[in-house]
Image (cartoon, rainbow, N blue to C red; front, side, top):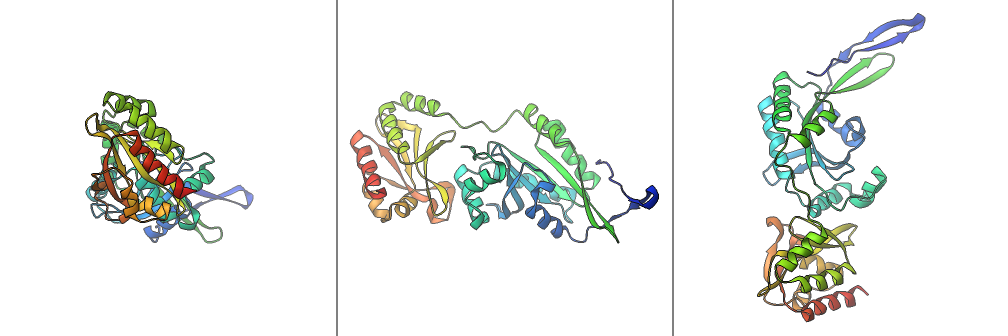
Length: 341
């Protein structure tokens, strides 16, 4: 159970008068304070979303990122029961776990608006460039003006027994007629202890993205090493690049944000079919000021329609197919170069 915080006002003659804790009038007020200044929870957080809707119908109060690119779900307890708040925040985590770098960037840029894009805001806020990989891990924080004992027991159990990165923060509200309002904060578990347990007790940690060398090796083992090397070299000269557990992605900056436009998939390639690719043709058409049909015309056929993670937003739509020859790679790359000049 978090320690009680007591405050005293030092008055004339070194007399002490206690400032009594008051009931925080609205949990919504606390949410506004956290969004405006997340440092009251942690200096190592940047808010990248508020009231974020998940694919399962839930609404995350605040979504944040830390300097390492790990995400944190901040959930206000409000009047939820212990069972509700625990189930809810774990449900949100199950959705956040699978968010891609591209998806996080898109969500953040919508939220940040004129304060973005995310890469610039990240650098401004933390004083360091955004990592190439976002969401290498995630954490949960339950916040309220009062955390009941049952919720505390659930959180302690998940952290102690399974190394789940979950914690709670209680904010105490104080009011003095002369000095005004005060806010105090105390964590259920020391954040360093939560982090340590999550890194030492968990056996199913999210694995890091593969390196460029590992993906190159995968392409060689799949029998498409030369094609992969040629495509990687040509696309790297035009776009920024990044990796996941299965792909090498290439991104361009347009419309105020970084957007992935093309992926190479060495694990899904073979000598007979060729080097597997995924093209975000809607994004490429916008970037190159042409039609989607123009983009698809310079890609090797046959191409199949493809959508990232069943997204309904058209910008996540494209096609997938195989690069089989150096000439096919050159045709696509030359088309892009001509349009970008």
